[in-house]
Amino acid sequence: MKLSRWQPFNEVWNPLEQFRREMNRLFENFGQGFTPATGAFPQLNLWEDGEAVLVEAELPGVDQKDLEIYVTGGNQLTIKGQRKQPELPRGVWHRQERVFGEFSRTVTLPFLVDAEKVESHLRDGVLTIRLPKHESARPRKIAVKGE
Amino acid sequence: MAEVVPVTAKGRPEQAGPESTRGGIYFTPRFDIYETENELLLMAEVPGVKAEDVNLHYEQGELILHAQVKPRANPERFLAREYEVGDFYRAFKVSESIDASKIEASCKNGVLTLHLPKVEAARPRQIKVHGE
Image 1 (cartoon, rainbow over the protein chains, first blue to last red):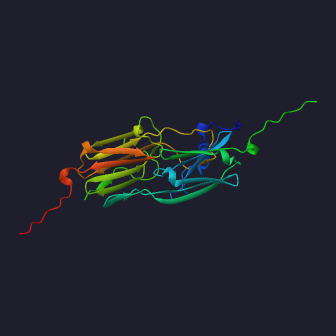
Image 2: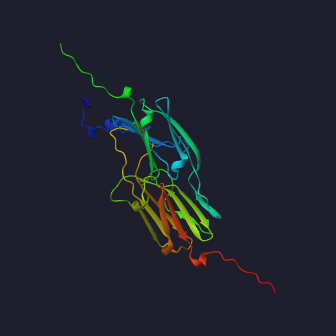
């Protein structure tokens, strides 16, 4: 729960407060937004559901057989692969916005994971990886003993 | 020579073209456009889109793509969030004469492929040179 602060004026009448909030909002979103296209590929979304870490990446045009996923050291996830350009009959390009070739990205996960139980799916160009937390990383309920 | 002029600019998510009543963010999909003797070939990256979610409209030389993307994950908090998910929208003016009745589209692995066949009159023709 957030603690409310004492405010001398009603927010509506306080442009400074509004400015502060606006700036906070900007900085909160900073880093969660978009990384430049020249940065790491693929871009990833990561979240957890208590039992596992979930990783999602958009990989349109990548064939399942051209994709490799590794977990090393218990918490290093590597997504490696290549996007192949389809063969085309003779012709001319009007636009080439898509990027082809090899890619590889390694990220450190915030928990140790059970590499044996990792599952991944590639559906409609979206890769989802579910990495169950290692036994040692799961929350444990501690019994409180009485007298 | 066919010329394809984008109606919308490429790049970051933006509101492009007519606004949706649903609101939300639109993304401009990356396109490859290639012209062969008989057709214009368009390939667009639309990750997360199934064939039934694609809405394609071609009228008077304007091709409009709107692909709906259902939200996939909605956790309380992301540990990392490098991209966002939303519908795709893009429109092109196609100056080449296209046989609209023969446009074909397919969607596989998050890539939408469009075949826009040229009308017979617009196709290049090999002219035979007769000797004596």
